[in-house]
Length: 401
Ligand SMILES: Cc1cc2nc3c(=O)[nH]c(=O)nc-3n(C[C@H](O)[C@H](O)[C@H](O)COP(=O)(O)OP(=O)(O)OC[C@H]3O[C@@H](n4cnc5c(N)ncnc54)[C@H](O)[C@@H]3O)c2cc1C
Image (cartoon, rainbow, N blue to C red; front, top):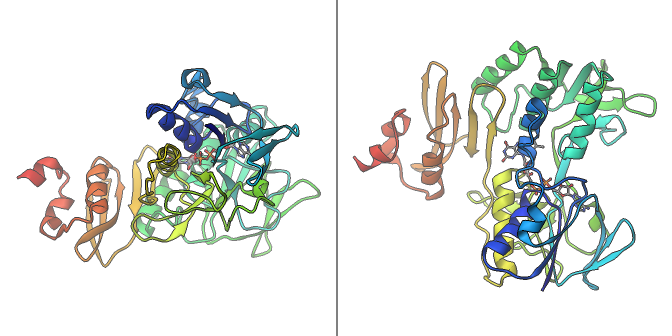
């Protein structure tokens, strides 16, 4: 069988690796739009801060080790599911028996002009390289980031560490509003401001402004903010444009069934490009985090091998790095009952519905995340454990005793 994978991010990589791990000898071809070996986006900031190649998580010899054909710098431009072909920018057609679409997503903001030249992205390595190169070449002294979600905050921290004057605006009243409650968000905002980031909350962007190239942002108040580097980062937008005309069903992302099959025959999808159901709530949306991309890639691989595996659903899980303060938010961020413990810099909030953990937020000490996640996914009745859950020593030992 001839398997073609579009995208060499965590999703595409895990499809290929799981295929080989389960003994597939099929011909595998992987296309990457970018001129690099596979890389891990969460490690890009560390790469830029330290200069190390931590982001090249699979090494340069990945294609040889897996015995696959790797086309880097080769974006797919169109898919024809009837002919079972993918067209490359060169016009070349690649035939497939099975297709996996894992082309990821890019940063985005629903603000007029956010896709104009001068608005930088930081979702792919090529986009991030372009942004950082400008800062390092001394061509940029200031940055303005629209949106303070977890990726926006990481970008702000990096650009500040590179010596830029950084302004970050957020429409809502706190940073990472989907992930943090006001109390935790205030702690994070305090760290950011201490590092010199000009964080403006309750501040909405109306449009990007400038002659030709974007040079600043006009706020809803009419005030104009200008900066050398502009980033639009309120969310992510799946890279589905090249599927136009293919008949593959999309909404915000690609629509998939419970086996992660698209609406086209012999075509699967995985990762940030997919609208998947939430494991706990059943809600469908793009769950753009690394572990979901990897898990979906593995499910796709098993289904390519004919196992008929059902995808259990995506998880909502975020952690914030580079703050010198571990912060982790998993599952729902509210519940009928909240268990709460604060001790110094450690804050633990556990959300319960009907005696079951539906989510939790840990600040300062995230060591018990695995245990809490396990209880949450098993929908265990934790009523008898209420007090133990808040005990910093809570763990397997506590459960056994
Ligand atoms: C700065 C940053 C920090 C992050 N931190 C975390 C974190 O701490 N924890 C976490 O869980 N997640 C984090 N994420 C999110 C995580 O990186 C993504 O969820 C994950 O990379 C998704 O994997 P993917 O393979 O679906 O997509 P991507 O990683 O986006 O990879 C898709 C690949 O497809 C390629 N491609 C696109 N279009 C085409 C085309 N037409 N033809 C061929 N190739 C194409 C792209 O070049 C890209 O390399 C972070 C993301 C960023 C940007």
